[in-house]
Length: 224
Image (cartoon, rainbow, N blue to C red; front, side, top):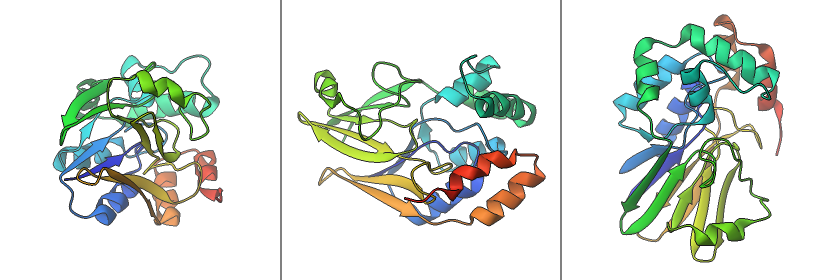
């Protein structure tokens, strides 16, 4: 089977559509959370996810929308994002977000898989970057494959018989301006990080019309 992993869409409908178009035919698609936040198209994103039967866990931004506020320690952009999203998200979309689990534990093609936005120890908030200094902690996790999001940095790390993967972001990449996702070939057990170019100028133009803070586009100016 071919399984696609996407993450951190952050209400970027154009990013999601671009990645879905690029990935072609797959058996299943999993989203690793943060469907909402930052950009102005949460309803369009959720409609597309439902139409494509994308399976998703909840991310920290999704949780903030449900509870109506971000933690006090959050930066200004996150605080503003929550207030902005609360004004534009529909009741139907909110109900969809409410239905999301904080983690998924499944067996896929004979392999035990854990899917959560942050980490196995903090499903919503902990960030596991590619340079995480304690990957040996994952050796004690029951599952064979651990799929994480939250960092917006793609990675594939093998340690102690475990494979830890992160598809990066198809809505707000932070290590480069290309969108990213992962294709898992369950037969070979290989994980392929994919990068996709997209129409950033168009997205900026459409988002500004919806009242998005221009500072949220600065991340797209980064270079690898």
